[in-house]
Image 1: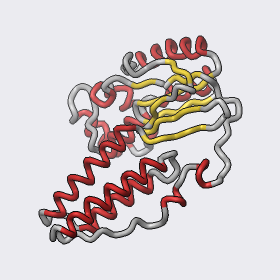
Image 2: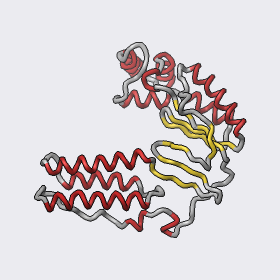
Image 3: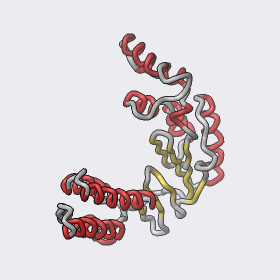
Image 4: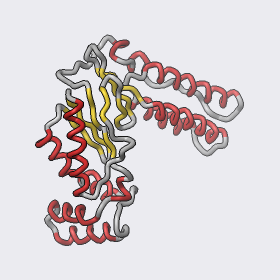
Length: 248
């Protein structure tokens, strides 16, 4: 598992501008995007702009091709500055990290030594705010990371105060909560969702009793329908030849 250190702030402009020139046919659009890149200083791209997001995803494209076509691990994935490799050999993954580091240096990218390491899949690793494990039976378990649960609890409590103050409506809170809850559907998060449902009902039932104007509305669907495969009777996801070591 691996991470690019301070990625957006350190993106070199010249490699990105070359990518833009190679990808776009209209020279006027190329010139416009070059001006947008140059307007952000000598190095780095801002986080809020959609063109910047596109450039940031595309910038390590050479690394993606190098890994998948030359190093050829059993599995590879990257989103922005987070990536992982899966292979059965720990030693091979250590060599891969060394070679990836050299490719990163060519693009002005630096690996974060604290977040880049080789781990066993049985220990699990965090990827895009999800905790992923590979069990001895071949089942892949995907749980929400602890930070995601803590953040949602704090968010619900804050929204309860906003409803009590008349800043938000219960309907707005429900839409927000259902969005979070929907993201938990395909994860092994049965107990976490039950606990969060209880907090949601408790907060807004209390507001209704205190005259805050909130009405506790039942969550759509049932928790049983969103249970993990072991609770729903669905077959567990099986791995075919996944390794015991991962590099992200």
